[in-house]
Length: 316
Image (cartoon, rainbow, N blue to C red; front, side):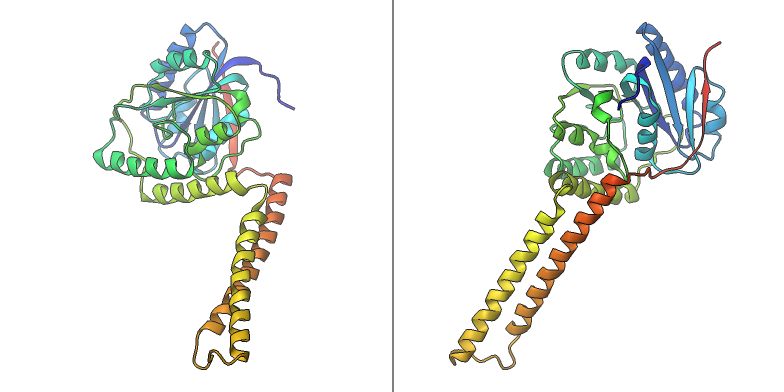
């Protein structure tokens, strides 16, 4: 059962080692949200920072701070924020200040036109040439595997109706694929051009490890969409196909050998037939095990992060 929605907007901001960015960003967010004349909360997730980000956050108000025990990544931070948020509408931004809070009303206006999620499109990105080049390659792969039908799924600046994120658990680098997952569930998605500001403090957290993890998670999301409730159909079907080919090949070799049409001496084909039958059986068994694992997952969901504490400060 969905918890009672007590306020209108929840602004969710993951931050990792952004000691110089969080205070100015909080002030900008507060100014924009005050102008909307609706109830709101601002949630910052300190993703295991070690540069004094948490100490800077506790000076701010109003704010709810979710402090992780260590760095678990942006996806986990967003997941924790979504689960703690009490608003009817969720608003997410990066903690580095590159997303412009002034664009929030524009996204909310688009949301009121009848869609369920509005994603920002950084059409004039202020990132390095190298990062933009890598992002374009990632976009190509994303369109092939995910096909979320937007230009910029990597933009954290988004607004969601809370219904979009119910029963959704995020892990790995899945925050980049939320729009695709939400679209698959039948929600309406839209996109709005937004301002993208150059980074003025801190260092980018984007590196080759995140690229590799993102690619693996992209394939995982594709598999989850296609076969999460029926992995046996994929592994079992492929296993049966390979085993059948191996069996038919073996049968062909036996029959033609008995008829004296072929010689199997010093030939590799009998081994190929046996190998294909065994591989097919292994795939089929893997499908059965995956089916059991999926049922276990649905019956016993756990988070992939650990919250040290939650601090909440309201304006006096």
